[in-house]
Length: 428
Image (cartoon, rainbow, N blue to C red; front, top):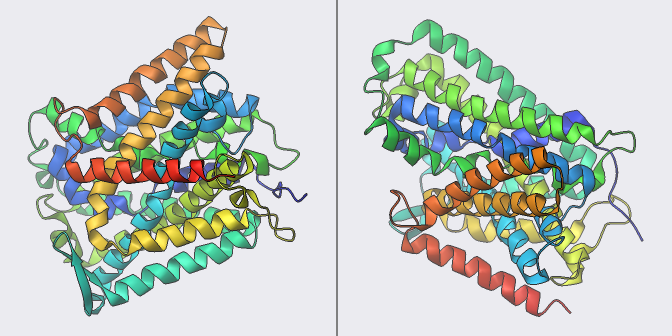
């Protein structure tokens, strides 16, 4: 029986985790971030979120060393909870990864339209008042097809692509910071907060889980580690990716806001020559790495579900020649195209649902570790992870917090849970 290829090293795990976190959301939704917190409030929200999630990253680093299973959260919770709880924990976490794929497929057309406005033509239909344009739709389908072929033909190809795109994003990011410091002005920062400092930071913290989802993607590919790979490398890759990813978002908010007045930021920035090329280059490469990273993670998690026979077993097949989860890869590709059909109306609601899904998965992983771990120090760290992730989770559900779930987001979550129930019911 064929197994997954074992070719990944620590650099691959870092770029997978970093790339899964950092896409094009910082450009597409920068106005939304600044509308929530202002430049300083948004930057503090991401920086604080990254630090708060370090205990969660520690728990994942411990879990993957003990249980290198692509099912990840489903495998961890299965150690202490009934099978149905384990199933839906992993299923909700799969939502956090998969949902990024159609998000990025939509975003590529939105970003490309900044350069080629003619892409905003030939409207096919409208969803929630947002037109879906044929050229942008075709561009998203083409990108999905490219990544499908890349992942189908082997994890080494996908990892090399990820390393290349992540390196480009980091280099361009450093260049953007330098130019912003040279050409920007402190006056562009005013006002520092959108509302009160506390509210500004809290509103930003609510979406941090969605944009930092990815540091825990390494465990989904744990079965593809090179035979010489030391398991302690998972911890280093996860921690570094989490800190670099949170720092990237915080510093990008500061750099871009410093370069132009943050009210109507995109109009100011895209009207100037010096930042536009750097911003769009970084956005495109970020989009590619994020799309690919989430495609890899979600296909591995779907594959693990098929192999465990908790959904139809066909998803657990491995290609004999390429040693990839071929059926799961095509499943994610088809679902991505279906989501792509929703167009721009998908962007902001997906952010909210993805944040909740990520925080739920983190809570379950930390709670499971807390239950099975006898060491007091490790249990204390896991307890901190439970508190942080559970707080991020409840912020999206209860009306007492600003920015809680809307009816559309509850419906989206309900549809996903229903789909999981159907697949689980017909697994045989």
